Length: 435
Image 1 (cartoon, rainbow, N blue to C red):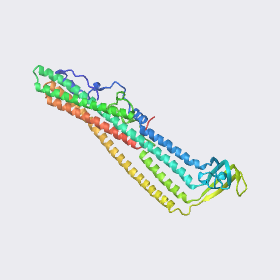
Image 2 (cartoon, rainbow, N blue to C red):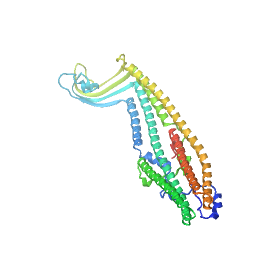
Image 3 (cartoon, rainbow, N blue to C red):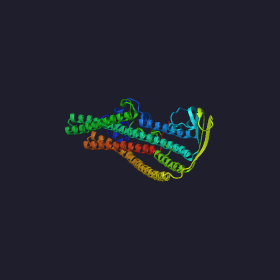
Image 4 (cartoon, helix red, strand yellow):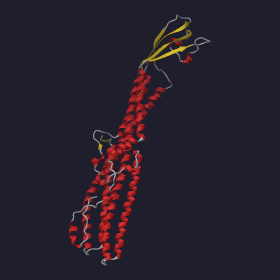
């Protein structure tokens, strides 16, 4: 609230008081010693402290590693193998030894190196592409987590700011009422006014003090909530009053970004479409190659060689409709993801419309409240002037002060609602913190 000149109790200054321009009451007693943190600072602290966001970043790294896992199938595999068997020849294949070391013609111990390579497998390429799409979806999910963390911090920050502003406002109202009470006490002491008026104005002062203390307590609790999400302490935090915060102070860059909700929905749809291609590729043939080099003790029935190799083709003919069912399942899931994407678009549009409604309504209210405040301040000063010059009643003064109180209460609440709607809409549509 704005400052006001100190009043000199005198009938002579009545006209001067009435002529003063409308201005809000000073709230110097509500200042906080510690530095006030801006919203961008609070959001950065919340992001740095969020375990959900840290877990999301870990999931990003895991998804990136998944791509490298599928890409590894483009390369040959090499294994060092050794075997010794006894009893009936050629009955040790369950050991998984390949190449000439696993040959049924081997006799005695054998050792060597085997290599395998898939020369052609369409499903492998689609698997890599699906993994890339999944990484995009995980990254989009990280943006959603960031949005959720920022939205929660924004709401708590503005709650604290609202309570801070209301506490300061009612504290200033109490101070102004106290000044009126002091003048009334003087009139009562000289027998010029009734003792009832002293009791009534004292009750108004006490009520404003009580309301200020109540909002101050809520402000302290809001700071404790903010301390939780920022991994800080409430004593190290302080929020400004809403009337000192503008849209620019939100510190959110909006141009060139898209809602994280839409990004994730689109990424999930892309994953599902890639999964359809991956499932369909199982119908295509696979071309494989294998080779080995090593040595064995002796060979049975054939000449002993120290190398082996070969090429092979696999083509699925019938697998009990497994591949067909897998493809149909993937197509159904892809269709569902497309519908989910449309549903998310509708939800985002609805939220944007809701925020636009709140923003426009708040702007209109603030315009009217600014005019009302000017008139209310003049009415209060005039009521005081008339009362001090014995031309008016205390009822006029009390009602005028209540009117100022009501308007300033509404201004703080509407300004806070405006900031919340503007900040929430910006975050919904992918706004990022200015770094």
